[in-house]
Each structure stands twice: as C-alpha cells, then as structure tokens.
Amino acid sequence: MAGNNMKKLNIGVIGCGFMGRTHSNAFSKVTNFFDVPYRPVLKTICARNGDRAQSFADKWGYESIETDWRKLVESPDIDLIDIASPNDTHAEIAIAAAKAGKMVMCEKPLGRTPAESEAMVKAVEDAGVANMVWYNYRRVPAVMLDKQLIDEGRLGRIFHYRTVFLQDWTISSDLPQGGEGLWRLDASVAGSGVTGDLLAHNIDTAMWLNGQIEEVTAMTETFIKTRKHNLTGKDEPVRIDDASAFLARFQNGSLATFEATRYARGHKALYTLEINGENGSIIWDLHDLHRLQFFDYRDESRLRGWRSIHVTDSDHPYMKQWWVPGLQIGYEHTFIHQVADFLSGLGSGVAAAPSFREALLTDYVTDAVLQSAANRSWVKVAS
Ligand code: SOE
Image (cartoon, rainbow, N blue to C red; front, side, top):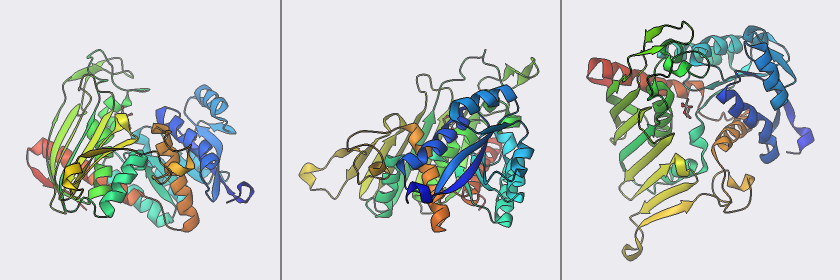
C-alpha cells in the first residue's frame, strides 16, 4: 500500500524497560520494510517516572509522555494500548483498555494466573477489540520455516518434541529481588519464575507447531531461598522457581521434554527445539537463529544427512522484506514481524496469532506445570 494511503494508528506504550524498547523499535520500523495498511504513530510513552518517560520519549520520538496509565487508556488520542510493563500490571491495564474500546497488545505471559488471563480474554472478547500477545519467537524466520515444513507434512507423524531455555544470570546469591529490572525474581509481581518467563515461550511455540499439550509432570527448584528485596531492603524468601523441567504428552500422541533454568552456567539465552517425526527431524537454536537443521529421511540414502539451511533467502518467511539473499537478521526483527502481521490482520480481518485466547492456553500449561511440581503428580491441562 502506498505510504500516503496508510491509515494512522496511534500507539500508547506502557513501560520503558527492555520490552518497551523492543516494541517501540518494532512500531517505528515496520512501515520501512513491510507493506501494511496502517502506520503506527508513537504517540505516548507511559511510565510512573516522568523523567524516565521523557528521556525515553526523546530517544524514540514519542510525541508525548504520561505517568498515569489510566489517563492513557482513556485518552481519545490513542487507538492501541501496548503493555510492556511488569506482569502484575497486565490484567488491570488490559481490562481497562478493552473497556475503553482500545486495541490491546500485551507482553507475555498474559496474566500471572489463569484467572487473570481468563478475565483478560473476556474483556477483549466482550469489547470486540483486536488483541495479541508478544510471543516473538514464532516469528524468527527459521521457526516460521519449521511451521511450514510441519504443516506440509514433511516430518510425518511427530514422535518427540524436545526443548530448553537456559540462562545463568541469577546464580549469584548477592543478586537482590524486586524493583526495576529484577521484578522477575519477585513472585508477587512475576507470577512465577522460569516457568512463566521462559517456558511460556517454549510452550507457545510448541503448541503452535505440534498442537495441544494434554498432561504434564514437572519438577521445579528454588536454589537460592532468600534474597534481599530491593523495595524493602530486607532479606525475604524467594518464591519463584529458579529451574523447571517437565514431561508432556501432546494430543497427537507425541512425547515432550521441556526444561528452563537461570542456573545453567555459560548459557545466556539458549532456546533450542528439536522435533523428531517419522520422515524427518528439525533442530533450531536461538544462538544461531537464522539456521535450521533439517533431516529428511526421504532423501536418496547415499546423500541422506542433516542439512543446515541458512534461512536468509527471499523465499524464506519474511526475508524478502529485508536485505539481499544471504544477509541475516536478528532478535529485534521478530518483534517487527509481529507488528507487521498484526497490522496486516487488521486490514484483512483475519486476526494474527496469538490472540489473548490462544495465549491463555499457554497459561493453562504453565499453571499445570506449577501444580504438578507442587503435588508431584501428573496433571491434566485445562482447555
Ligand atoms: C528473561 O531474562 C528474558 O528477558 C525473558 O523475560 C524474555 O521473554 C526472553 O525472551 C529472554 O529472557
């Protein structure tokens, strides 16, 4: 669509941390690369600290700042509320935004509990507003290529799904919990530890690629039991899961293992997945995100072996919008792809995924994982 014909979509982003940056970047770049029917306008950035909001606005080109999200949500100038603030704010903001008739995009996980997430789903569906959750890893071109290969039946019947998300940034017992940047360690804000923060990504991708998870059995551990809390200055119990591992059965009969931890010394963000099917297998690794390993058993036997596909050609997902074949893209592009798909969905009337309702299914799985770890039993996943 020619630039001048694009309708403007006024965006209000709440939160100017890590995710506020990834989302702002995506909204500001999308029309440079994708032909979409709407042009996002960085209208207002909202954060409690006005100075911080102002310097963020200056850096990213927001037209104005707001320190009270309630005012932003009610503002007639705003079409879409984007929630990039900590997890304990998601439900209240999303529900108010939907009631005010705004489109809502929300950082993952949707709520801290299924009850919060269900209320959020109800709010956007009652209001009939467009909605989406930022599960960005679906939109790595190599992961999207996985999806194409699976949907084309190239792997055949799936037997195994194996996935991890490994980090090492909380090993020091001196690291405090709570407050700016460290709210992920405070269960009252985050909801859970690596189960909601990291495994939610693995689960979202897994169910998108391989269908519904039916039941799980899990174990979790909190290795460091108390940490100083940044807001109280006192040593307080740590109530998040530092590590979480579970076995799962998918509805299609395949078996899975999932593991996430922040105690895997040497790993910063090692998200990997491997899928083994009757006719082939695929492996993907976030540290080498533009490559897809593919084994096709139907190849001529003399030549059979693992192919390492450099997912940078113009017929690979999203890639013709970028540079020239062979030149790769990275993490921030996954967010740009997500906005592009959201805007195209608004234009076509076929909403891009994952919607709040779809993301709720991920929250049902993380909830079953936490229940299973607490009860040391298999737990059926709600649907
Ligand atoms: C945690 O360190 C974190 O930033 C997650 O919150 C993100 O969702 C993940 O993509 C990278 O790791």
